[in-house]
Image (cartoon, rainbow, N blue to C red):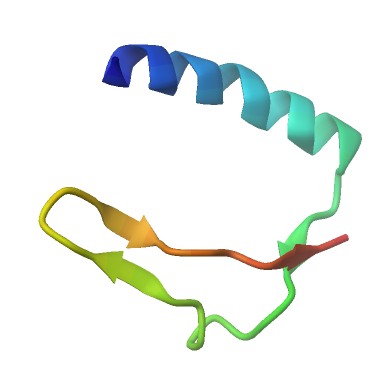
Length: 50
């Protein structure tokens, strides 16, 4: 299942960057909330603007 998710993201990100070529964070780097639970780690949300 994880391999399928990775493959999907490999297809989606280039297409997204092609359609929205200048994405940037809508907030400062410090207030971006992270998730620290036993199953996953990463950005909880990442507000962007273009």
